[in-house]
Structures are given as C-alpha cells and as structure tokens.
Amino acid sequence: MIDDIIAYESGQLGFLGSIKMFSTLMTSGQILGLQGSYYRTASHLVTEGLLEPDGSINWDAVDNAESYGM
Image (cartoon, rainbow, N blue to C red):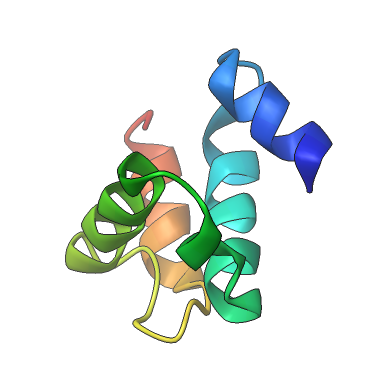
C-alpha cells in the first residue's frame, strides 16, 4: 500500500490505480490513519458515485468516467 500511496502522491498512479487504492484504503479502514486530504478525496469519490460508502468500486461509473477521459 505504501508504494501505491507514493505513486499517488507523485501523480504516477493514474485514474484506475487511484480508484483501486482508495477502495482498499476504505475497505481496510487504513484511510482513518491518513491525513485528512485522503478522507476528503474518498468522500468526493463516493459523492461522484465512483465508490460506494463501504469502499466497493462502482465499476459502471468508473468505466463511464474513463470513457470521458477522467
């Protein structure tokens, strides 16, 4: 997970990698131990419908977002 966080922080993780990382952080509860910006980003991903409140990925929304170049 640390490698993913480093890649995310350096802008090298990409859209899908970021979604998967935030999903893992949420489902494992690790997000609670990170700085607030991670929690705010996770909340935004839930609001946008890309992640469910339990951290699971909404693949239909992710596929749709990817097709629009997000």
